[in-house]
Length: 112
Image (cartoon, rainbow, N blue to C red):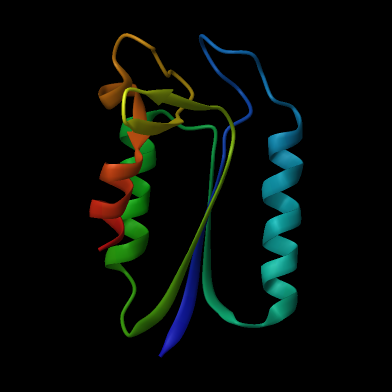
């Protein structure tokens, strides 16, 4: 069995402030995980909209077999609305969080 990681970094946004440090955050996390020699696969996803994010995460997970650990890391904007937290994709819109972001509920569904 192997361990895998999905690292997401969004620094460029259409409607939110840019976060210049996020690119460095993802790079540093990737280097750290590589140094552990624990992760057989590390998928890096940067500056994508919600559809691309979800698609690439599903593709990365479907290509894995016999995983005993999956590490998820996100650096970028987040948004709390009612009882749901959203990881903001590059085109995140407060009026359409489910379509333009990744909710914690949907993240759990994708990772199962």
